[in-house]
Length: 307
Length: 306
Image 1: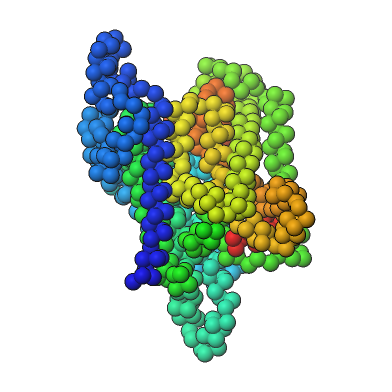
Image 2 (image 1 turned 120 degrees about the vertical axis):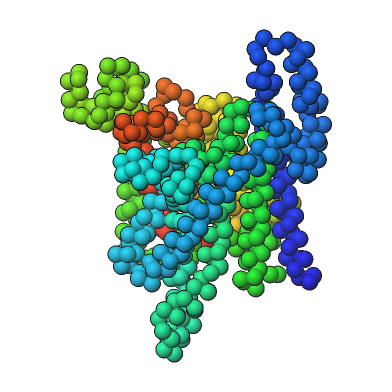
C-alpha cells in the first residue's frame, strides 16, 4: 500500500501544480486583454452604467483579489457568468462539451483501431509494398498541417465527390470528415510507433524460442509480440489522446463543429473571460487526468516503472 | 531531486515518435541518408532564395487587385493576355505571386521562432541539467505544465491580447517550442556532467560557464541542430495555423495560412486559392521534418531512444 502511495503521490502533486499553473496563466492573459465592459454596452452608455456593470462583474476589485476569487470559485466549479451568453459559464461550456467529446472519442477510436493493426502489419510484412505505402501515408499524416487536411477533405470528399456534408453537427456523415481530420496525426503517430515497437520485439530471443517451439505464426504475433510491445503503444496512444484536445480547436473551426474548441476561440474574440477560463480549465484537467491515467497504466504494464 | 520520476524519463516526447527504431546506421544506408538530408537542406535553401528573390520571381504584384480578373482559373492566357499559372483569388490577385511572397512570412517567422525558442530552451535545458536540484525541479515542472496543455489555446489568447504582429507571432511560437529543446538537452547534460573531464576542469579551476561554453555546448550541438530542424517544420505549420485562424500576419501581406483561410469560402467555385498554398505548405512541412529525421539518424541516433 505504501508503495502505491509513493508511486502516486509525486504524480498527483505534479498534476495539481500543472492545473494551478495553467489556470494562473489563463487568468493573467485574459485580464491583460482589456476591458470587456465596453463590448457589452451600447457605445453611448453613461459612465455610471459602465461602473455599475464593472462592479457587478467584480472587475473593479484589485487584480490579486480577483485572482483569489477566481481560484476559490474555480475549485467549486463556479467560473462566473458568461458575459456574452449571460448564463453561468460552466453551463455554457457544458452545453458544448458533448460535441467535443463525441468528435474527440470518434477520432481517437478511429485512429487507434486503424493504426495498431496497420503498424503491426507493417512490421510483420517489413519492407513489403504494404509497409512502404502505410509508412508513406503515416509520414504525410504526421507532418501535414491538420487544418489543410481538413480543407482538402472538404474539397475532395464533400464538394467534389459529395459524400459528406462540409460542416456542422448531425448524423454520422457530419462526423466522418472532422473525425478523420482530427485523428490523422494520432493515427500516423500510433502506426509508426506500433511498427517500430513490434519490430523491436520481433528481434527478441523469446520470439525465436516461440517460433522454434512451433507456435503458430499468428499466435507469435498476437500473443507474444503485441503484449510485449504494448508499453510504447499505450504511451503514444494516450499522449495522442491528449493532443487531440489541442487539435480540436482547429478542426472544430474548419468544420464549424459546435464544440468547446470553437467556443473558446469565439469567446476569446468576445472577451468572454469566464467562458474562456472555464473551457481552458476543463481541457487542462481532462488532459492532465489522461496523463495521470497513462502513468498508472504504466505502473500496471511495466513493474519496473513502480519504484 | 536530481533523479526524475519515471513518468518523464520513460515517456517519449510527442515530437519524436520514431522511438524504438534500430539505432545503428552505417555504410550504404548512411550515405543514402546523408544524400537525402543534403537534398532536404537544399530544399530549404531554395525556398529561402525564392523568399529573398520574390520581387524578381513573382510574375505579378502580389497585392495588386483586379476586380475584372477575379477568380480566374489557372490558365496560360488570362483575359489580359498574361499567364495566371495558379489562377487569381477573390480580389483578382495572382495566386502564384502570393505563394512566392508567402514563403517570406513562413521562413522569417519560422526561422526567428526557432532561434528564439532554441536559445531559450537550450539555456533552460542546460541550466536544469547542469545545476540539478531546485533549478531542475522548477524548470521541469514548468515544462510538464506546458506539455500538460493544448498550447494553441494559450497562443490564441496571447495573440488576441497583444494583437497579431511579427514579434508577437515569433515569441508565441518560440514559447511553444522551448520544452522540446530543454528536455533533450537536459538529459544529455545530465550524462555529460558526470563525465571525468568535467571534474577535471573543475579541479583545474575552470568555471562552470567555461565548462558549459567550451565542453558541454560543442557536445550537444548536433542534438540541437536535429531538434531545431524538427522545430522549424513545427513552427512553419503553427504560423500557418494561426494565420488560418486569422491571428497571424494580417492582410494584405500574403501568407500561406492566410491564403488558405481566404480561399476557404471559395472552395466550391475556386479551389485553387486554398489548394496551392496548402500544397506548398504541406510539401515544406514534410520535407523539413523528414530532413530532421535524416539528420537525427546521421548525427545522433541515440536521440531516437531518448
